[in-house]
Amino acid sequence: MRLWWNQPRMAELPEIDFTLEYPYTRTTGPIIGPFLTGLRDGRILGTRVGDRVVCPPVEYDPATGATIGPEHLVEVGPAGTVDAWTWVAEPTSKHPFDHPFAFAQIKLDGADTTMLHAVDAGSIEKMTTGMRVVVRYHDDGLGTITDVHFVPGDVPPAMPRPAAAGDADPEPVAITEHLIGVRIREPLQPHRRRFLQGLSVGRILGQRSPADGKIHVPSRGYDAINRVPMTEADDVEVADRGTVTSFTEITPVQYHGQTETEPYIRCSILLDGADTTIGGIDIRDIPIDEFRVGLRLQMIWNDAVGRGEVRFDDVDNRSYGLTEAVYERWEPTGEPDVDPELVKEHNF
Image 1: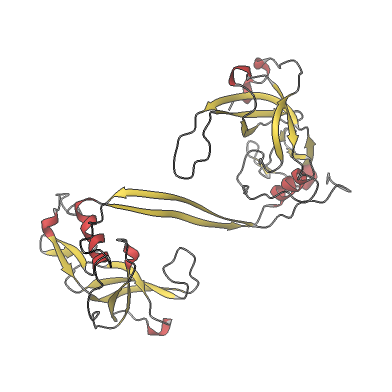
Image 2: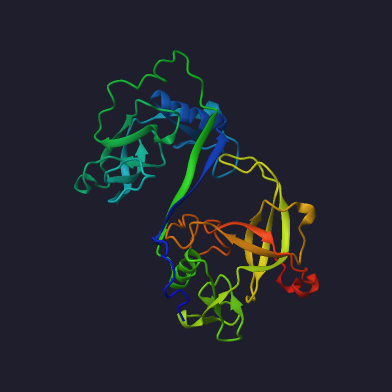
């Protein structure tokens, strides 16, 4: 049954749309470094491996594993032939253009292998296998693979782009950094939507398995142990207080974008009325020497709950805990501890 008739206004729940992204930094080494430096400075390099020229260049012979040194670097291009291609009709923010273009396998003149890169052809009708393309260098090259793209034709640029404009003696590219990311878009599953709607008005919703009667919080829409689905008819409400079943002290590791500076506790809590724990609960207001398995805690809801003002920006269909968007903190209830032996089966 539904549990929030005549409740305060619920928060809007848009579809999930977020980008998972992190920076990736590495040294470039004796082969990739000159290759990226060349792209920045107006030339394309490959490596001579036996009687073949490989582009993009490689650090090891693919056949024998032998090391390939920088003395094997040779210049190729700037034009080449398209061996295969695919059309990108709807580019994303991660693509090199905001209009349709092609990704193509291009065998540059002087090379024996193909390089995958972008071709700004203008329209799909202008793309063909076997067509000739030529490199175009970007004015703001930084020493990355995106410093160039290709266009139809066979005429090289009038002159290479000046190396690092304004710098008479630019440094070789020794470090490269990229933001690696993927955009995830999906609708909220029905059980997940009802769970968040409940949180937005101050109620915690679980589901009772029709197989064994155990209550799962939060539910994944099915009982994974008994392999049975759970529907809206199985929805039940549980309490906003419970018992600590396990915890750890976390000392934040400093990394790009880290905002945590002080150690804190992360714990799992078995809510009253539930048979599964909620995990990933961060505790910052209770000293570590006062925290323990069996401690009884009460969730303190925040002021946005019930006003339709809760923003569920940090949730998806896979979250297994409670979002901090709905609570301020957890406080000891003052009740006697629960015997740890009684909750040991819920240790996580």
